[in-house]
Image 1 (cartoon, rainbow, N blue to C red):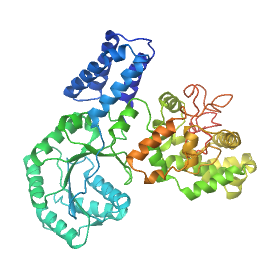
Image 2 (image 1 turned 90 degrees about the horizontal axis):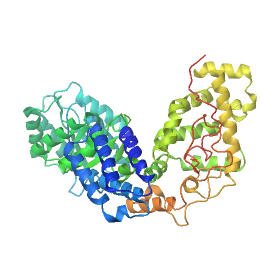
Image 3 (image 1 turned 135 degrees about the vertical axis):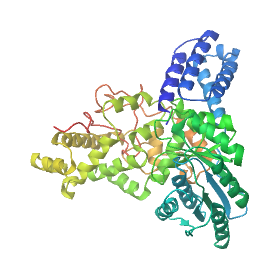
Image 4 (image 1 turned 180 degrees about the vertical axis):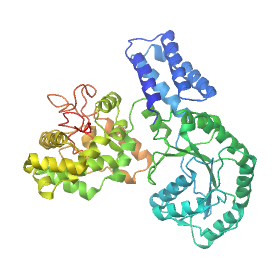
Amino acid sequence: MFGTLSDRLSSILSGLTRRGALTEEDVSAALREVRRALLEADVALEVVRSFTDKVRERAVGAEVLKSVTPGQQVIKIVNDVLIETLGGEGEGINFDAVPPVPVLMVGLQGSGKTTSTAKIAKRLTERHKKKVLMASLDTRRPAAMEQLAILGTQVGVQTLPIVAGQSAVQIAKRAVEAARLGGFDVVMLDTAGRVTLDDTLMAEVAEVKAATNPHEVLLVADALTGQDAVNTARAFDARVGLTGIVLTRMDGDSRGGAALSMRAVTGKPIKLVGIGEKVDELDEFHPSRVANRILGMGDIVSLVEKAAQTIDAEQAQATAQRMAKGQFDLSDMRAQLQQMEKMGGIGGVMGMLPGMKQAQSQLASAGVGDKMFKSMIAAIDSMTPAERKNPDLLKNSRKKRIAAGSGTTAEQINKLLKMHRGMADAMKMMAKQKGGMLGKLGSMFGLGGGMGAGLPAGMPDPSKMDPAQLAELQKQLGAGGGLPSMPPGGFPGLPKGVTPPAGMMPRLPGLGGGGLPGLGGPFGGKKK
């Protein structure tokens, strides 16, 4: 998400922080580069002008130019203006109405409208404990209604029975009545789309809105379409009146123009973003967190939330107890790698850690990534229970058998075993280290391996915190002065040339607190 834009802005602003003092010329030169970066990211010209004008107005003031750390002050100003541009405070779906609350989903064909409808219904059912009914109003696209019915089965949400021959307005009225009689809290109406905006599409959506009086009208827009998504939002808002926007494909190579322009141009909040194809890959849109990630400041609050949602507390506790006894076999390692996958992979986790931008790109260029971890898991799956428990059994003949069964090579099996030995050794070393931001995070979720002292006494379960409590948690996690210090000898076993930020040793959640020791080179190399 915003990868290219983040790299550009981080590079521009890091040049300011290296200066002892700033002049107006320095700020103006930097803002010219910022302007160019935003335009390349397909941000609307009017938004770019407003953005740079606001930054210049605040940055050229005496308080910045005379500040002890003027570069940092400018970065703070850019961050504040980014948050304002993205909408200030995040807004979720509003249910403050008499049930069943109608939610009208609109958008162009191919934007991911039907899939997003199912994702939102799943989220409302599981997180908000709402009883949801979904109905497809698409009478033109072949199998559109059947697609929503199949998705409903996958996510465990009821769909309106299909009756042939009805119009979109008739289906919408039937859905609202069925939801009222069935005691549903929310009824989601998935309207038809078109390849392009046309009067027929708009007229049908307007008729459905008039017949159902929806409490929310959500536009589903593809983030990859850039300025076209902004134009689509303008057109729908002018005709039917939007209450919010759902951006899909935010996990792709989107340049960020749609997200940065949408709120400023339309005045409508981005409420949710799709971050993958799976039905649970939908996130709330928090402007402050997104701004932090664009500027390479990380997003610890989202990392805490994701950990709370994905980590199995009982399994983590059992693993912690085994690690405390010095027990860490290949089955434990497999569980840790799978946990990393659930949290978005190494790229997803490192993207939410402050100051890890350079290390993340170095790891990627060295071939250390999610593909490598999948190969490791496949190799461990090809072992017998006895081999996972006692890696010393793995002689050459067994390694060849495992390599053939997992699509890897004997050399890769050796690297896997080396990584395991390094992690097992690191568990003992980490048990002696206390404190640190990720140490607190690890012990909070029962992740063993000596990840440090726990959170302050009385800290509630993060999965049950409100936004204000999560913000306070972020402050407490950051109070320890950043990530834990590197042990003597540096970052153990990473490929040559991969160096984390000075004084920082990322102990990634789900890897037992041991970071990535023992990686002598890319695991996912070509077969020989």
